[in-house]
Amino acid sequence: MGSRDVLFKRINNALFDMQAATSQTFEQHFLTFARLLADSSLQHLNQKLTAELDVDEFLEVSSRSQGSMMGSARLAWPEGADEVLGLQWLLIQKFAREPRGLLSFAHTYYTVGRNLTDELHSLTRQLLIPFARDYKDHVMAVEQPEELTSMGSTGGGTAYQPTQITYQINGNNARVNLQSVDNSVNSVVISSTVINYIRDLRAEVQRAPLSEEQRASAMEVVDEVESQIVSGKPKRAILAPLLASLPAIDSITSIVSNLLEALTTIGAT
Image (cartoon, helix red, strand yellow):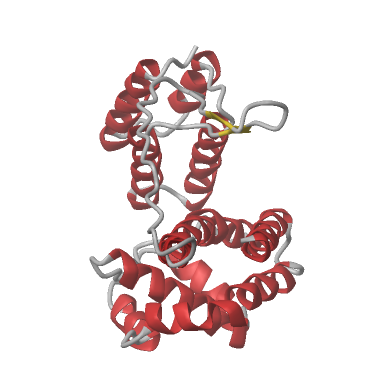
């Protein structure tokens, strides 16, 4: 798995570069990202993942959701997780071939105003980063059983039986120490409820009747809140004022209240 680890490290590096890029430099890093995802070692898996999926049809159906108000368009994702993953992979490869279409796509479906760099960063946060995370999980889930089967075919024909250990982890920044002697691997666990509230909050800001400037400002606040939470050390004294600065719209206020309560349950100080 050494070569696979290197590949995904390079994919992550491309994501980091895209988060820091401007609209003038974004394309270079995006093309690197797309090329790595199409690595020859992943060809069979990618073909299986995208079989019978039509990205152009998906975009045509999605375009029908576009209303008169900017930010009203919604991508018509299917229900199946593997279908979503396959379409996301196809989208990335399509815009690697047609990079000029990437800006239009970001502006239509990930708009935060008229700043192209901000919209590309929004695309990175909301589509590319979640895709890379889920894609890696998919690759590992497909390849691990094959490795275990291979191990079971050696050593006198006795199949390898993996030991399953379930960890119940509670509290923010809870950790599991693996191989903990000098080189421990720490996994930070963030409540899925909190992450879902962040996603709901971002979606509600996009739907809210705000000016472009108000929406861009609100999205910056949501991004900062998410950054504080993902850091593993969220502080209520910082998050509460940030959240209070969001537009006083009932739907947004309700999500903020639920988010603050959820943060309390995971130990935000």
